[in-house]
Image (cartoon, rainbow, N blue to C red; front, top):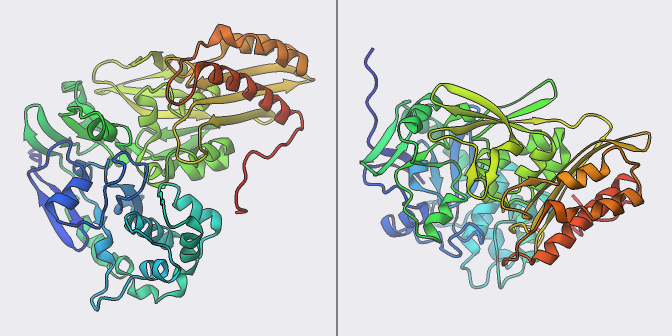
Length: 490
């Protein structure tokens, strides 16, 4: 049987129209495409880094055979990643008779807009929430709007509007509900299972047909930029003006989307987003669920992947320290060959990981803490939600008969890589779990870490915060329960 020839166009739905693009640059963002090529100016450019939400649109895609719609940041989402999806902008909400959509109507009636620049992004985030939860709690509304910033209206009015949406109109009038069967059919027809290749030579983009196709492609061309969620690579383009071509887009590879558990180990495919992993991790390892809720806004969590957070090797990535503390391992693949390594051994030095040319992270294996152990994660940042980390500490300890039998402590933001606090661990292991032991261990931090000063925090602040996190962990494991946040009741 002859091998199918690559397709030379990206196909997706934009609102109600089918789009087939042959002239797509590897670094063309969805925001630029909407505003400059389609003249859809309702989607705004604010921060150009996925922080403010002014560019929020919905992207519909298949997950486990079901069509789901998620809010995403168009400013850092690349057009090349949209094959087989449904892009929905604020313009699609209007009815044929000109009436406002219930989300828009509620924003007007409850005074949720003043200057209006951020309003389309709020509307699209609330629209995505409404489809998931018609009657959301305050906590659900706040979570859905973590990635949307408003500088003039005030969030109370927007929260009141969010609660009132279900009182407007009937569900049958909602465009995405009314069109769902037709959209499913149209997107299904686009899925031909072949590789997409646009451009030539270095200036090209590729969407692999499968994970095997991706493995072969990367083995043949190991210098290509691999893009999963683009929450990091997007900023390489919008902020650093880097040339990222050729680009391989892997967000649509279903083989990298699996989540399973066997013998107390949760295995997460490298393409699983934070949102997709949340339910399983929050149930099996609750502190990881709490951490995920503080990674970016909902738009970022809908795009970003745990595998990507590990693969890029950032010293301030949020997931590596807790995964190291849990004893996680990685499956790395090159062509048809696979190997498994400890996650802590993956990080060698700043910008250097134990990954050969053409090799990629295929899966992450996370042991569930055994009964009787204490596990906690503490993220320190200038604001609670949607902020980059100053330092992050993760602690796993087993105490038997008042003595520390096992301890694993890892930090991010304290060194050139995510790193275990080996000297601190040695000062705790085999010792009584008491204030004197903890006090003695605090003096060992200087042997493990020599943090830097940057825009996020000074070296002295990081060193002090890191020591204080151990004190906090001790207090919490010995019965002291202090409130860790002020928030609405769920």
